[in-house]
Length: 259
Figure 1 (tube, rainbow, N blue to C red):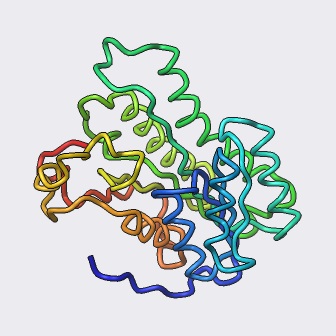
Figure 2 (figure 1 turned 30 degrees about the vertical axis):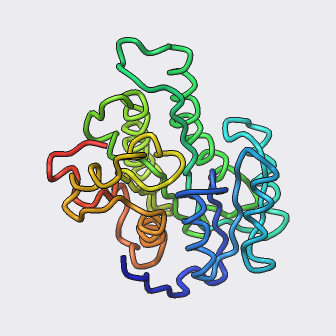
C-alpha cells in the first residue's frame, strides 16, 4: 500500500470522531489531525482513550469517555466542544456494535434491539445533537457529516445479517438526512468491506489470505484506507458531493463477494 499524500485541508477546523480509541475510528481521527484539524474523540473506556489521546501531538486532541447511546454523554461531548473550540466542522459517526453472529432466524431479539439502538438510532442521535446545539454553529460552518456504514448493508453477508441490516439503515439515513439538511450541511457515508481491526477479527483470523483472495486487489482493507475516504468526503474537494455512500471494498462486491 502506498503512503497517502497528506495535505492541510482541515486547518483551523474541529472534527469529532465517535468510537475512535482504535481501528477505523482512530485511523480517521489521526488523518484529520494530520491534515490540520483539532480532533475530539470518544470511546467507552477512559483508560484506553487517555492512552490514545497521548499519542497525538500536544494540544491537538481531546478525549471524552462514555457510552455512545447515552444522551448525557453526547451532551457532555458537544458542550465540551463548544466550550473548548466554539465550533464543530466535521462529525464522523463511527460507533457500531455487532454482539451476535449466526442466522437471522435464530437471532435473540433483545440483542437485535441493542444493535439497532446503537448503530442506527445512535447515529441519528449524534447528528441531531450536533445540528441542534446552539453554540456549535454547525449549519453556519457549512459542516459535514460522514457516517461509517458497511458493505454488509449492501449485500447479504453470512453470520452478520442483523449488523448488515443496521448498516443498510445507516446508508439510507445518510441519503435522507442529506436531502433534509442541504444546502447547509453535506451528509455522506463510507461502506467498508473487511478491514484489519480487532472488531473484524472473526471474519479473517486464521484465514486472511483466503479471505483476501476474494478481493480483486488481493488484500484486506486497512484503517488508513477508510480514513482517506472519509477525509475526502469531509473536505472541500467533495463540495458538490452529498447523499452518497462510497463503497471502499477493494472491488469485493463487484467480484461477487460478501463481507
